[in-house]
Structure formats: C-alpha cells, structure tokens
Length: 248
Image (tube, rainbow, N blue to C red; front, top):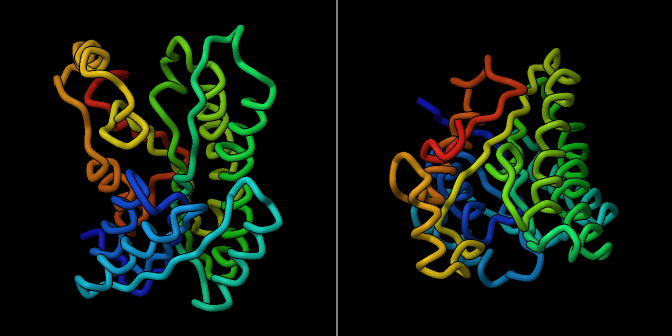
C-alpha cells in the first residue's frame, strides 16, 4: 500500500525537519523526489544523497517560494526536466512570534510571502502539469495554531489558517481533474523550529497533549505519504490533524 512508483514529487523546504522527513518517506515509496531549499543547499544535497544511498531517486532545486517569478521558473524547469510533477508537498514556512501589539508590518509581509503566497504560487505552478496528467496530489502543511490559536502567534496562525481556506477552494476547483488537495495540520513536533523552546516550556505544552508526548517529523511525513497515494484518492479538501489529541 501507499506505493508511489513512477511519481515525481516536489517537497518545498525539504532540507530539514518535516520537509526532510517527507522527502525521505516519499522516496521510500518509490517516488522521485525533488528537495527544495532556499539557503541550505548543503543540507538539501545531504538529503538527496541519503535517499540515493538507499536506492531512491532524488534531485535538489534552490528557489525561494516567496519569490513568485523564481518559483514559477524553477517549477517549469523541473517539469521539463522530469516530464511531469505529480505530487506537491507545500511545506516551506517560517515563524515569527510576537504579541499582537508588537507585530511589525514587515513581519506580516515576510510571513504572508512565504506561508501563504509561497504555498499558493507553488500549487498554481504545479497544477498545470497535474491537469495535463489528470492526476495530482497537493498537500499543504498548516499548524494546530491555525485552528486553536495560541498567544503570541497571531500573525503565524493567520497565515496557516489562510492555507486551510485556500486548500478547500482549490480542492473544489480541480476535483474533476482527479487532483486532490488536502492539509496536514501538525501539533507540537520535535523540529528545529521548536528546539528553541526551553525544557520548562516543552513540559507545560506536553501537559495539554492527551498522548503525553511531542510528535516526530516522521509521523507528519506518514500522513503526507498517505494523502499523496492512490489509497487517498477519495480524500480531498480535508484537514488531517496529527497532534496527539492536542486539538480535536
């Protein structure tokens, strides 16, 4: 089950954390994976090398999803190189946390540019190939914060909520072309983004997680692989929460 042989997948922000886990998991199921990066070229190449060392197929592509023209050009080039693009894992994202009264306009612009416009641009660019193939899978990464809120993350939560709204409409637009569009909404996951928290902060958070622990990037990747597979062909416009029961 969940085999992806012959499929070509792009993972934005694929050089570390959840993105890396997704890239590796997709490759394990037979997909050719393109690992996107912005500044971490060495890390992206390390991911690709790890995939090929296990017999998988991988390539790297450097572009900033917040740069619309660069993103469109890069994805067009990838489609020409590989012949198609079947799967998009729109994972690239940034977090800038602050209380509402301290949120700066430039912070809003940065967050929106990457988390919202970047996700939409990659999906729009990938859609052309998926429409020709009459098969496609788009998986956006949101966050539990988008649904339950969190003090100090108004701006970040706003952008991740916007992704959910976009996914639901795109799912309706392209369902007739056999293209599914879904969202994976991670809870508290062990990544570089959460590593900045103190042990005390992590301890307080795990108290409100019914399963009593943080999640792993691999657990998020498993959800993405499912939604990218033929087994999820009848699932579209949905938000799959992977949060240990933190929000239900």
